[in-house]
Image (cartoon, rainbow, N blue to C red; front, side, top):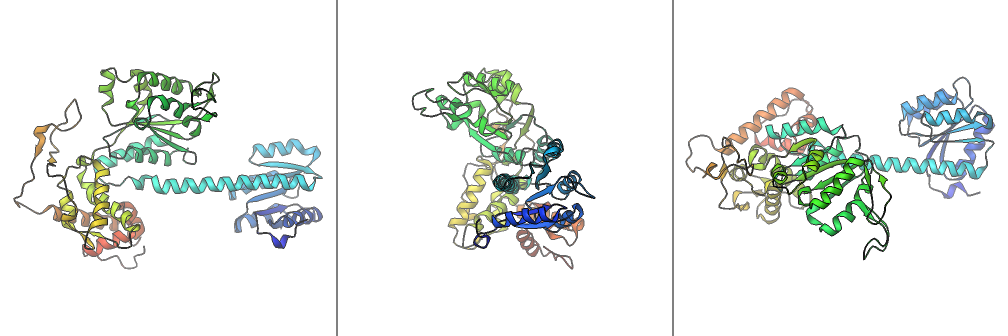
Length: 484
């Protein structure tokens, strides 16, 4: 038997049995395998151990007094929902052990058991615990990176988008995301996934415009070995990779009618057929599709199948172009600058004149263009403060009138809606307007949350550091006793 002193702890196990000899022998065996083992003689004692610290695996006897193993199982998973449980039972109580598995136990082992059998079952249960912990960690990281906080902006258009997104996220309804290039359609799809019940499962994106028509079918549906030249082995498609998760099909209008027909069949049947195979495979996938085109016009012009359009357009999420929410530019610019500063040894800060300069621009490249401008300025600016001259804007750009209705054909404001920027100062400057709006927003958030500046920052969509910096610039004193 291996010397336990040479092993690094491999997992934390709690052994529960009202028979002292059986409990001690089992614990000794597991300790010799390098596990950290605690013992408990009763169910109540076991619950006390579970409430005090982390336990990966509960190994408990079924027949105990006064609390039996099934009752302990029920109460244990309430205390620690991710706990793995193996039930120890006599041969004549296998039915009860099966019932325990229905209640959430991972496995059972019958007494008297062989050392090898116990080791095998414990190893499997702990491997499951490790995988589950890894999935939880990835889901948390995914949510933190792609949750609603990633959708920066407090404009009316963004509030409407996020409200609609949250409403549909918990369902499995297919979502069509429509917006111009650079507006952040994939970010919306990732936020949708992060807030769904599938958030712990894969999010798989595919850009139809980036893959040739001949390869797209194989990419999505997979292929069998020898299905075509170069298919040297069987390959799973992205539908299979996204099973139980979300498949994001970007630029779906770039596909051919033939491919659209195959995609429609898959969405209707919930089955995929690999290229070169006749057997269908069941998949459970939530679909989010996106396009930067006027998809209704594509249907009208017979370039996109109408039946597929109706299958995809169960819920429509329209991502507004940046020119329709210029009030979000200051927050977005700060957000992108914080990210750039995190990668740079020389942090920069935005001047109010630079913000004013950016808000005179209509951003034909949308949020992606703003991000590029900020990163470029952070990399090339000579001083620590970013000034208007650090942001070279296209000279032909104009601010669009909010009152001008969009063209029916393109969905964009007509050309007569374009007006030049006035150079006459007839009122407060744009920087003053922005500064006043920031001051009022911070003051109102402080009134709601008092000394809890972390909640104030969260509501405003900025980091605590940015909030402190803004308050200092606006001469706003934090409340007495304020905490980050």
